[in-house]
Structures are given as structure tokens and as C-alpha cells.
Image (cartoon, rainbow, N blue to C red; front, top):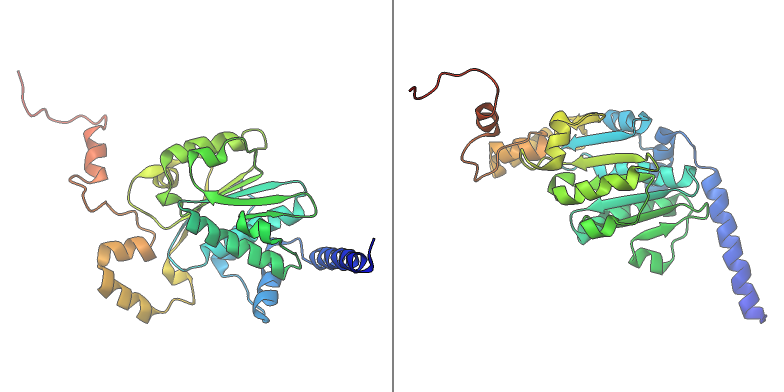
Length: 273
């Protein structure tokens, strides 16, 4: 082996050892883990918001986050994903988003956290939106289509902006968790009274639910919210910032009227024989 090649190999092994040592210092407690990531990233102590701390401390297998824009839902989900990979060896975590661009953004948060934890990422991994950790764990991010999930057995599945993903995709997700009995996180801002995100929030079984309006984020000011209300109107404002499942623009009848039409309650007939 040439001297130059030997030097490169020594440097590679040294970098791996440093990465292992850095990750070994990461706290296993999920709240402390996020604090540590925040300190490394911003060079100052950053505490999770109270609602984020509740999510981080939860051991529920199924979590659904109905959250305002810009409250930090993608950040806390990225932290949970990385924690699963680092502290559950040989695990597979899958992050889905409605579009490839959104999947890349979700992966970028995880990879940025991983780098602050002392990890190293190969260029090829970034291009493929995937991480392979030295403990055998993997994190993969991809667009939410029926074909992308086939063949995976996952320990954690995250669907970001779930209200915008197709119902057929959601149906294809569930078998990937059947054997592993893995965790499932749905995170989104509402998008009308339709689709699996709304149905699971309204009546799904086995979910731990978190409703996070903009007022629970100290970084969103009342002045900003007043300006947004004037800009977008009350209906969209409630949907985007106050977790409200609003009727779609083209709805002729409300969901309540449609549901009442199919109820078992006795009603007076319009016509009689």
C-alpha cells in the first residue's frame, strides 16, 4: 500500500472513530437528545417547546400531529427519526412526503442533525436521500407513492404533510409495519375534511393525537397572525394556523349535511303513499 493511500485510510478510520465517540456522548433521553442537537447546531441552549416535549416523551406507537405551519413539527419528527436510528441498531426508518422536493427537505433536516451529532455522510447518500449508520440502521426518504414502499419492513414510518398524500399510498404503507409492529407518525397541516389524515384524526383508533395551533409556538407573533388573517381570509387562516379541517372550495354540501343524510335517525318522509 502506498504512503498516500495508507494516509487516506488512517484518516478515514480516524474520522469514523471520532464519529462513534461523538455519537456515544449523545443522551438517550429524547428530550435531552433534541437539546443536544440544538446546542450543537445553534451554539446555544435551545429547549423544545412544551408540545414538542410531550411528543418526544411519548412512547405511543401511533402519533398524529395536526399542526399549524411553522411550529416545528418537521423538526421534532426529524429528531425522533434520528433518535430511532441511533439508539435502535439495525432499524429502518422511512420518511415519506407528497413530492420529491418535500421528501428532500425532510431528509435535509435529518442529515443536518446527523452531522451535528458527529456523523459523516457520503455524497452518494445525500443524492439518494438515504443514510446508513455504522450501527446498521438506515434512514430513507422518498416521495409518497404506492410503488416506493413495496418490499420494505420498517421500524418507523413518517408521513410528512400527510393530508396531501393519496389514500392509496396510505393503504400500501400499513403492511410494511405488520411484522415489525413499528411506529407510525402522521404529521400535517389540515387540507379539508377528506383523506386518510382527516379520517384518522377524526375517528381512527389507537392514535395519540396532538393539536398544535400557531399560538403554541412562541416564535410566531400575534402581529404576524393578524397580517395573515387579513391576507388569506378566515377560512384558510383557520386551516393553516389553527388546525381546522375546513370544507373544500368547491363543496356544494358540508360534510355534516352529507353525514346526516346517511344517519340512522328517524326523520319525517318528504312524501307519503
